[in-house]
Structures are given as structure tokens and as C-alpha cells.
Image (cartoon, rainbow over all chains, first blue to last red; front, side, top):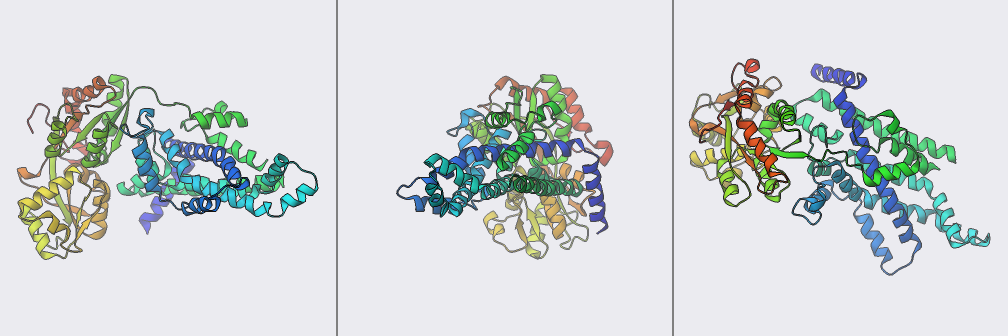
Length: 230
Length: 296
């Protein structure tokens, strides 16, 4: 118990003193997860909207498949991306293995189902009655889609939040694709994983606390932004 | 509007380059955010040499010393990946790394025979040891390694934690079981006392410590963990316990001249000296014995 309390004390000192390694790993992790979330927004919010607004055969099946992939194991995504971007893989020439960009790619794929699925169900939640109301007001298709998107924005925010949370907290893909290279691809989760293996409890607790704080801060910030524009 | 708030937030962190100058962080237009995320600036210097090293060398901390020396001498960014010998060889085979630093002669020679490696150069060795709780429930202290394993096996009470990850240390453990007269498949099925960790040397030692178990370790990793765990060296004799580290430039290396530099570097007199001196004062004994030029 004393040992734990001592480790906790050291970890707080590491954070408060702005230990360069801790700061570096934290900024890198934020950069990677934010990039992945942003890319996923750009790709999957429009894609989700298309799936929702368009009608085509097999739409229901597609949505079920997307939802079935919500909890795709991160190590599986890691394995697939590894095989894709390894030198001998189909995307080997891009040189993405053991880079941050490679981790971003894996995280985009990892959060794709969650984001797509939540965007679709978010749009479904508002558009059941809204289109009729809007049509009676004389809105065109584009205007209608925009209005529905606006109505659905709280759902979108939770989609973004959940995606960011999944990206920043996963360790399997970051380890396999990034390789946990010090000063280059080490993230909070892979550093914690190495630290625990090395018996460096204080460092691991420090990084764990930071990870937890980031999750809380991002969540609070987005909720605040959400309630202000409402 | 709510989105924009998040995107701006993301822009503040989208750089990914650790020490971020403040003016870069203030580039908070959405366009800049999209740009930096989509292209993800090639922050890497073009020259980087990827080295896959065994977890035992990584966990001992030696690379933290050697890395800046190599980078300074050859003006290249050195990236050290740690993995068991099996995984390192797999990376080498796929051309995902440029140099291997591993410790399993049989598989290294096969790797060369298959054309995946340029050459194999031993540069250091130390010894494997069997460590366990100081109470030593199966009384293996001072035994030959083969008899020690036999004693642990027949007692079937004290756990034995195996690396179980096809690493060089795992290969050594299999050789010892064979030398002790056991079929390894049978050992794996022998009972709950035989635990396959599937992880690196350091985590395996931590696990053995938690379980009050025996395990096979290289002496360097054990010594660097000694302060944090309560295990003791119980068996440390015999030429069968020698642990030889060799460097292999990968045939498919992106820059074969730079990969070859690693061999020159590790076998150079100065670096051999550094390897021999590494932590010697701290532990009162040598972690690694320099071995350049020896046939091991």
C-alpha cells in the first residue's frame, strides 16, 4: 500500500512538473487520435448521411453489418492493417508501418463502424417526422438534408466523442502498427503497457491519469460547445 | 457550430509532432485543421534505420546508450523496435525492418540460408539463468540446468513461467527441456504449473515474481529488474547457458549500406568497450561480455 501511495505521489510530480517525456507522449497521442477522429468525420459523416438519405436494395443489411462491427477487436484491426501496410503487403510501398500515420489509418478503420452507425441512427432519430414538417414549409431536398443534419447534431457529437474515446484508449493496433518506438510512435496506451511490463508503476499511473483527464476534458469541452450553440 | 468547436479543438492537437511551437498551435482555421489531418505532415526525417532487437536487450536499457551514439556517428534516425526473436525474424523476412539483433543461432542460420539476411555477426554474450523465489520450494539451487528443470517438472507444484513467445529465450528453454529428456509438447500439456506468458522478458519476470514461480531469464534483464522483484538466481552454470547476441543486416533493407554500418558499429572497439562496461559498476558484474570476432 505504501508502495502504491509512493508511486501515486511520483506520478503527480511527473505530471505537475511537465516531465518532457510525459508531455511528448501526451501531445503525440492527442495528435494521432484527433487526426484519426477528424479524418473519420470527413469520411463517415457524409457517408452515413448518404446511407441514410438514399434508398437502395440491401440498405437494412448494410446497416446491420455496420452495427455488428461496433465492437471489432482492436488487435484484429491491427493485424489487418499490419498485413496491408507491411513491406510485402498491398500498400507496402507507402512505408506506413511503424509510423504515426499508420496508427492514424488503423484508428480510422477502427472507429469507422461506430461513427457510421451512430451517424445513421442519429439521422434516423430526427428525420422521422421532420421531413414532412419541412416539406409543408416549402423546403427543397438540400435544405431538408441540412436541416435534418442540424437537428441531429447532438447525436453527431456523441458519435465524434465515442470515436475519439475509442481511438485514444486502444492499445492493440497502436502497438502492432506503431511498434511503440520511443520518441516516434509511443502513445499513452503503449507506454503504459511497456511501463507495467517494466514494473515502472509511477510512470504508468501518471500516463493513465493523463489519459483519463483527456477523456474527461474533451467530453466536457464538446458538451459545453454543444449547449452554447443551442 | 458545435462541430466546428470540436474540429478547432482537434486542430490544436492534430500536429502529432511532440514539441509543438505555439504559433503552429494557433493555426486554428478549419481549413488548416483539415489540411494537417489529411496530409499528416511527413515529420520524419527521410533517413531512418529500423532495428528490431530482442526484448532482453531492450529491457536491459542498453539501446538507450547505443542509440544516440549511432545516430551521431552516422547521421541517421535510429528507431528501435523490441520483439522476441521469432517476431523480429518475421519482420526481417517481410522487409519491415533493416537490421536484426537477435539471439537464437539455429534460427538465425536458417534465416541466412533462406536468403533473408546478409550476414550473422556475434558481438556480445552473457548467460541464461534460472531464477525463482528465495525459498526455492523445489530445491534447485546450484543444480545443472537440466536437473533443475527435471526437479521442477516432477514436483509439479511450483509454477514455471515460460516466455511462450518463440523468442530466443524461449528457444533456449526448449533446448534445455530436450536436454533434460522431455518432449516439449508434453511439457506444455504437463499441468497448471507450466505457465506460458506470451510476452517479453521483463513482463515475464514480473509475472514470475507475482506468482512465486521459476523462470528462465538472461542475466542482463534479470539484473536490471532485480530491485523491483524478489526472485533470486538459483541456477547459473554450464556452457549450455551461454546467450549469444548477433547482428544481421536484412537483405531487403531499404538502405543496405546503412544497415551494414550497424555491424561495423557494434563490433567497433569503442562500442565493444561500452557494451562490456554497461552497468558493470552498478551491478558489480558484467551484463554483456563483448565478443566481436569470436565464432559463437
